[in-house]
Amino acid sequence: MHNNSNKFLVYDLNHVSDYESDNLKIGLKDEYSEETCFRILPCFSYQQESQGYIYDDDIVYIVSTIDHYRKMAGEPYLHASKTRESLKTQKKKKEMNVSTDKKSSWKIKIFCEYIEEKKGLLSVCDIIWINFSE
Image 1 (spheres, rainbow, N blue to C red):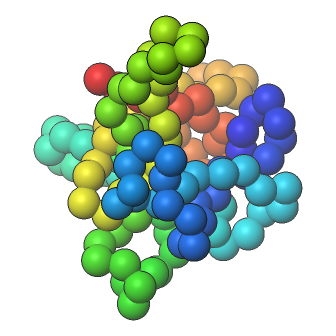
Image 2 (cartoon, one colour):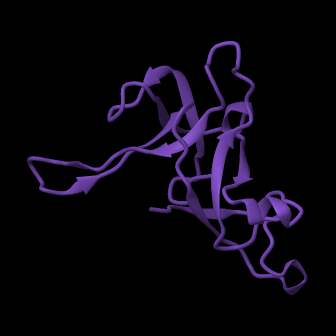
């Protein structure tokens, strides 16, 4: 869920990214649905060797749970585009989109009350803060 708007992150199979034409566009949706579900996967082998646990501040991949293999060439990963500079504002921008051939790593931050028993582990239904990890 996008914290500022209280909407759910979703990608659209029918629209391409504004920054990278070979990727799909990301948007926000009012209601929860199958299209708003994502899996968090480990980036590094040491994370896979630790029984698959994901900890606060870990770097991960984020992939949609929808099975679109019939329409897509691979798994739909969240991806951060290359930096573009706006000619009008001179600001550098990136776009979050979905790619089947490029994986971006993301740093997550558990964004809820810390419970000692969890010891920084990510659990089902945790609210997380996602940052692009360069």
